[in-house]
Length: 337
Image (cartoon, rainbow, N blue to C red):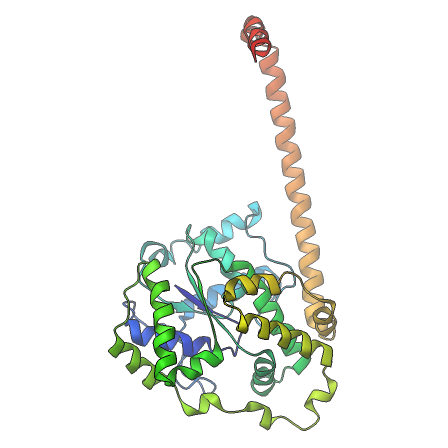
């Protein structure tokens, strides 16, 4: 399975609980090194992150400048590029019982349909937008309004990938797993997902042990208190309200995946305005549009050449003796039909 969600949304915590409760069979030697912002580890393999970075480069994008438009991977010009990675990721395609995680999968997930030739089930984490934006500001110095736009775009792309049978949980729900009754409810939901995708259910003992070992009191700290007093003065209150209302609708829904797809069905002008403040994002988007146009021109020219070839082939067939001899049969068939 793939674990994903916008950056700073608890994907590492979610992946760590899954890994520790299911005792993943794959070696985790390829995990990213432990760093200060994630002392428990990222629970994502270096090769997956490296590939996702390359896929984002194809889109003239990167993790902090996500594309506005949904990626299209089934173009002829990308076939050779995607096929190079099939052998490297054959264990993902041939094996079933594995877990890997990367927030970039919100954007690149659809490329793996062409790399692995199968759909990998998704487990996703959704966090309050202002908390994500605050965390991105403190970790990467990203302005709050741009952080909100990043939150929106990642979840917009994620909503296009989620299907019924996937699993969506909020970061706040993960933090509340210390409550025994809540942990039992989440385990029941998660077990239904795991069984439907041929994963082994975690035992109660391994589930409780994973929660106890991975949940830390520091995860529940209020990062807003660390912001300068005037941090929110430069952010559009309408953008904050837009994102938080969407989050509340999804969080309160009985069908979060359906609500997710409904809430993220377009990109509002408020999000685009925030992105336009970031000159690099605009530049990357313009370059991507230019290259996409060139790709479409090349595809159109290739289609025209194929059409000319087929028309010539049809003319040769129609000029042949066999075509003329079988003409009465075709006329009779048309008459009977």
